View 1 (cartoon, one colour):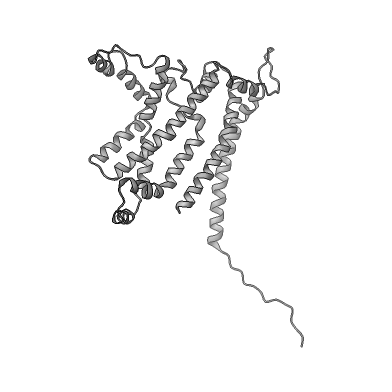
View 2: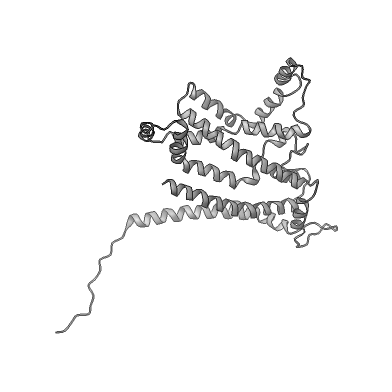
Length: 306
């Protein structure tokens, strides 16, 4: 018996949905890659080159690592501006992470519980995000100025005028202002996440006898964790950009400068590019691995919630 080795023809079908999904993914990836190449690689290419070209005595530049050596030597200096700027930046970052974010979650939860006047409070907290920062700074400086409301209140207790923007009080004043005016954006985003919580889950918790704190920590926070983790990740992505309105308050005087303001000051006022570019590269070299690690940690939290 003769066997026929010819295989039957396989009918192939074009999976239109599959290729549409792949095309959409490719378009999104191309957009991200082009954005990175143009707005990071291209714009920062000259800065990266300048970081390795310190200006010598003859006004010419040589390819060396002197700028990076200078950074690490200044970080250990007793009166180094870079060390002060880094310390202040970390303080702003810690305040955002450990004060602004937890308080934002608490405020969002109490607004979610529809306390009396919750709509008005939501608008009040978001108001600093609507009005220009320069106007708020001017208003704040008037409040704490000589013969301002705070000065008049202190006079009632026999306390002489206190200048809050000099010496060691200046940084604490800016930090306080920054913390107080930083809740708006977080509350809006977290409120949007909380509003999508299924009421049946909260009702089930009440039937099981959970109190408000248990409801917050065991129900609300896990359910809004994807949004909360994104906000936390943004904190780490911008760790070296953590700052307050230094320019509008003190222009970096009284040891109030931060990394971002110091770079702005060196470029804008002193026309120095090489050394600030090296500082930016060091910050990027530290910030990128830290951000990727925190993304991995936070994503593990999202997977656990799911």
